[in-house]
Length: 170
Image (cartoon, one colour):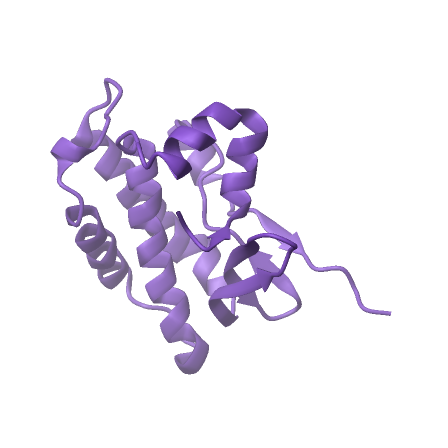
């Protein structure tokens, strides 16, 4: 068992303590769904974009972001994904669309100052570890996660990644 817990683990515990026990105590995990694989692969492309932009202040070319997405996609064999009746090719293409949308809409409007920043919160038992996907200028934190497992093409074109504003200091 891990030396820390995450907000995801806490959320799972709140939803279903038995499932949490199966996954985190017994180590039995179900294969990721296609949407999770898409999200993880997209996340790697966005992370590459943001890491390099901290110092260069320029966006990666779209084709390089697509390559980063494709490389991350290939890390997990399709046979290890639970496709839930979805076509792997369609899920992959949907992710490619999200990468291009990210490159056109989100990336040009963000100047990262921190990427994958870990924060550890000590507790009486195990520490809670949180990871912020992206800290950007103007006290904004971004999470690169699609909001809906199956957004329509129109919704995907008009959706920006969620952002959470940090509280202002007095």
